[in-house]
Every structure is written in C-alpha cells, then in structure tokens.
Image 1 (cartoon, rainbow, N blue to C red):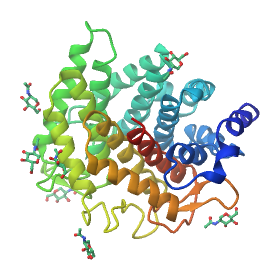
Image 2 (spheres, rainbow, N blue to C red):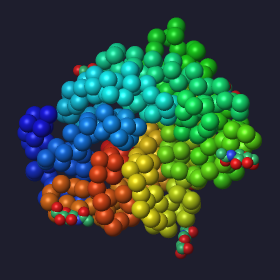
Image 3 (cartoon, rainbow, N blue to C red):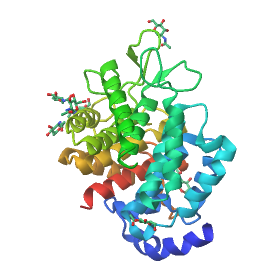
Image 4 (spheres, rainbow, N blue to C red):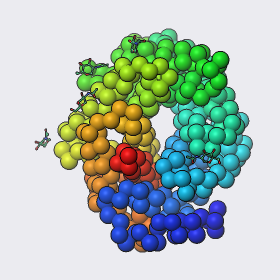
Length: 361
Ligand SMILES: *[C@@H]1O[C@H](CO)[C@@H](O)[C@H](O)[C@H]1NC(C)=O
Ligand SMILES: *[C@@H]1O[C@H](CO)[C@@H](O)[C@H](O)[C@H]1NC(C)=O
Ligand SMILES: *[C@@H]1O[C@H](CO)[C@@H](O)[C@H](O)[C@H]1NC(C)=O
Ligand SMILES: *[C@@H]1O[C@H](CO)[C@@H](O)[C@H](O)[C@H]1NC(C)=O
Ligand SMILES: *[C@@H]1O[C@H](CO)[C@@H](O)[C@H](O)[C@H]1NC(C)=O
Ligand SMILES: *[C@@H]1O[C@H](CO)[C@@H](O)[C@H](O)[C@H]1NC(C)=O
Ligand SMILES: *[C@@H]1O[C@H](CO)[C@@H](O)[C@H](O)[C@H]1NC(C)=O
C-alpha cells in the first residue's frame, strides 16, 4: 500500500501544490489531510477497522470513497483497501460486520453503500443488505423505533437515523421489484422519528428516547443533526417528496445558526471547543459535514455554503499543523491545533470534502 501510494500522491498534487495551498484550496487541503506522505493514517485506518474506533472506521472508509468520487484520478486508489477491509474485518469483529450494536452495523452498512456507489461491486451492496436484515430485527422497542444495541435497553436517535438512511438507500439501489419494502421501512421509521419528538421545537435532534416514558431526552450532538440529512436526501430521491428536504433544511438552519447550541459566534462548529474530546466526540462532526454536503447538493442554500467554507477555512487557518508538511488537523475547528489522530483527520476530511464539493459546481 505504502509503496504504491507515494508516487501517485506526489505526482498528482501534494509535492507541487502544498506551497501554494491556502485556506480556500479545499481539494488540495482535503487530499493533504488524508494522504500524508508516510501513509500512516491510511494504515492506521485499516488497523482500526479491525479493532478500536470500529464505528468511526466505517465512516472513514466512506470518506475515502467521497474523495475518489470527486476526483476521478483517485478512483481505484483505495479499491484494495476496501477489499482487504471487507475480507479481514468480519473475521475479527463478527461475520459480515455484524456485532452487538445496531449503530455500528448502520455505520458500516451505509459506508459499504458509499463504496458500492463508487466501485459498483455487488458484494458491497450485498453486505449492506445482510446488515439491514440483521438491524431490522431490532426494530421493536416498546416506544417504536430501533434499539441502540442487541441487549435492548436503550433507544438512541443515531441508529434510527442510520437505519432510515440505509433503508432508503437500498430502495434507491436494489432492483425495482425489491425496492418497495425498503422504502416502506424508511418512511415508517422517518415518521416514527419525527412523531416521537426527538426533533424538538428548536429543530435540533436530541440523543435518545427514554425507554420507560418514551419521551425524548439528551444532548444535541452534531452527528445527530447530520445523519438525518443523509436520510432526507435518500428519501427525497426515492419519493420526489420535497417535504423531507424541508425538514432537513430546518434542522440545518437551526444547527448552523450563529450562537446556536452547535455553532459559535464565529460560525464554527463547537464540537471539542469547550473541553477535551475523546475519539468518539472528535468523530461526531464528520457525519454532520457529510450529511450537510449531501443535502446542499440537492437542496442548495447560500447560507450553508458560507457555513461550510467558513468552517473549512477556520480549520485550515487555526487548527492545522503543517510544519512537517503533513497537514495534521486538530479536533477543534476554531483551534488551536492540539492533537492529531485518524479521527481528527477524518472529521477534517469530511469538512474539506464538503467545501470542495459544494464550491466546485
Ligand atoms: C470508478 O471505477 C469503477 C470501476 O471501474 C467504475 O464502475 C465507476 O464508474 C468509477 N466511478 C467514477 C466516479 O469514476
Ligand atoms: C426514564 O424516565 C424515568 C421517569 O422519569 C426515570 O426514572 C429514568 O431514570 C429515566 N431513564 C433514563 C435511562 O434516563
Ligand atoms: C411528503 O412527506 C411528508 C412528510 O413525511 C408527508 O406528510 C406527506 O404526506 C408526503 N406527501 C406525499 C404527496 O406523499
Ligand atoms: C420549517 O420551518 C418553517 C419556519 O419555522 C416552518 O414554517 C415550516 O413548517 C417548517 N417545515 C417543516 C417541514 O418542519
Ligand atoms: C433556511 O435559511 C435560509 C436562509 O435564511 C432560508 O432561505 C430558508 O427558507 C430556511 N429554511 C429552509 C427549510 O430552507
Ligand atoms: C453571538 O454571541 C456573541 C457573544 O455573546 C455576541 O457578541 C454576538 O453579537 C452574537 N452574535 C449573534 C449574531 O447573535
Ligand atoms: C506540530 O508539528 C511539529 C513537527 O512535527 C511537532 O514537533 C509539534 O509537536 C506539532 N505541534 C502540535 C500542536 O501538534
């Protein structure tokens, strides 16, 4: 992997353009953030796909495919990474990426759909379908909706958002004689999600539903605002119903508003700003920027482009350490740059790829 990547990277962008890169060269910055010359991040991603930060690795795999989809020269660059992740991870974690958590399974299933979109390899669609079949078995809480894990004690928003996204994505990709049941499941779960009240009067999504009272509770994490946008885009594409986009647009406006729960006075995401973040907290904004990127492409809003590019520039101006030419990015997009790992790089990548995608058309 290392030997084959270095010539590609240096000949394409890295060596020649780093010197001229600035905060607005989103394509250069996205590639530099991910493809560090020593390739440590990519090998770390693959190692972690087999172990810790397991769910985050499913997101990072999709982010790699996002780069390739935007930049055709990179189509094919990671095909061997997908193939080895597909063949190696199940042996370590559980057959077919099935484990005890419906959210883990949803992250991986949706990641494999992104990889399927790029590669058109039906194995990747099929692993998403088998994950869907397992996840659907947990859609039976006393409050409706999907459990967080197979011990059936906790109802979180995130596995439900991932499940809606997955079901609608499958409806859009399987043959037309098979799509209706997936679409029905997605619509049912979407309606449950909005009726149970996890999206509050303030149009922000809270973390979970209390399994005894069936009332919404918890913190408003950024990833909860993001994955539901991906779900809305897929449901809109499956149905042509723009109301899904309007719901998503209201969540996006609430999230991106200056001085909201999630955005600071400088217009930058507040994740990891008011205290240290572990690799779970540092990952959250990645899916938020991915969902917003997807929504903006089908439902364009100038205020969202401004928000995305402002965040991408802030992270470059304030949270970057490129003293060793490696484009390391920190957890707080307002800065200062304090720490780097595959999760901080992955969340930065999702923001930079979003900025690249929404400014390149
Ligand atoms: C990437 O390569 C695959 C396999 O060759 C091809 O089917 C797909 O259309 C390509 N995607 C893009 C975005 O060029
Ligand atoms: C659910 O709500 C009940 C009643 O208000 C409360 O006693 C319980 O602690 C809550 N459970 C959780 C997990 O928050
Ligand atoms: C569009 O979706 C909304 C939200 O789920 C729903 O209330 C409405 O009935 C749908 N419209 C059509 C024409 O199906
Ligand atoms: C979106 O927000 C506007 C303004 O508050 C409101 O009028 C509209 O009903 C909301 N749409 C949805 C689908 O919630
Ligand atoms: C979101 O904010 C923009 C800019 O203020 C506004 O035009 C739009 O109507 C708002 N709501 C939605 C759902 O787009
Ligand atoms: C955001 O909050 C800061 C600090 O309280 C304040 O100075 C600023 O005016 C606020 N901005 C907006 C747009 O509300
Ligand atoms: C920035 O990179 C330099 C050179 O690799 C390193 O010595 C320094 O510790 C880094 N600073 C931070 C905040 O990571």
